[in-house]
Length: 164
Image (tube, rainbow, N blue to C red; front, top):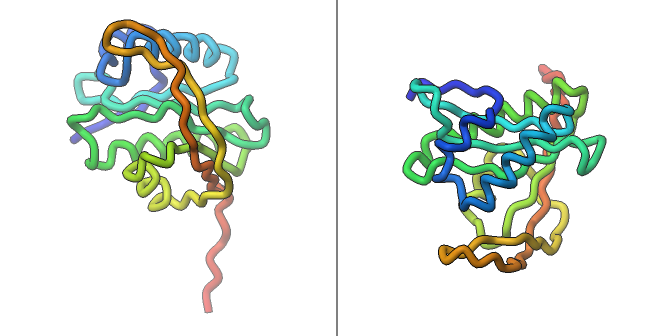
C-alpha cells in the first residue's frame, strides 16, 4: 500500500470515526488546537486517496525532555501491515527534529499486541502507572475507565557502530 504521513487536519476528523467514539474525536480536535502552538504533533498516515488510516500524537509538554507518544490507533481492518510502525517511526523523527533524544509511551497491560509492537521497535518498560480516562458507551453514557499501564521508553540517540 502506498502510504504518506502528514499532520492531521481538523477536516480529517470526519473520516476518522473508526478511531473511536465522538468523545474521542472531540478530544483529538482539542489536541489539534494544541498542535498550533507546537505543544504536540498530531500525525495521520494516509491512503493514496489522502484519507487517514492511522493517527497518533506526540506530546512535548508531559515531560519537556521527552516526546510522549499517545492516542496511537490504526484502522482495525488494516492492522498488522506495518502502518503502526510507520506512524511510530515518523513520530520518532518528529521528536528528534525537536532536539529531543527520548520517546516514551504508556500501554495498557491488557493490550499485549500493542506492547509486542513497541518492544519490537526497541521500547523498554520501566514503570507501571494507573491510568484513568472518560469513555463513551454506545448508549452515549460517559463513564470513568480505570486501567494499569506499562510505561515504556526508547532512546533515539544514534550511536556510531563500532567495527572490529
